Image 1 (tube, rainbow, N blue to C red):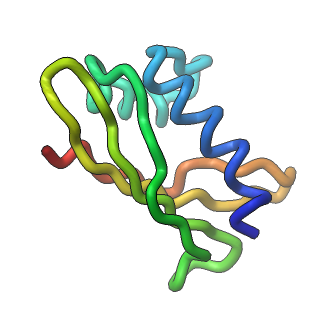
Image 2 (cartoon, one colour):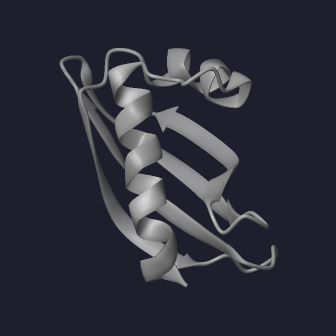
Length: 92
């Protein structure tokens, strides 16, 4: 399940870093949280323990002001795509 969720997770993180929300109000609320960061890395990933068909990713946002941690829980939708269920961070 992790391998299935990873590409959509990477696409969402890339869009957030680039400030692209594609009219998605959920992403629009998250974009200011990651503003100023230029890249990200995922260090840990695991099947979500409490939510069916979910994967938790933990990583680091990198920017000119320093690094910050983040956690994102991706949840599989009925259409097969993965969407953000929860996002926490950045935590310097």
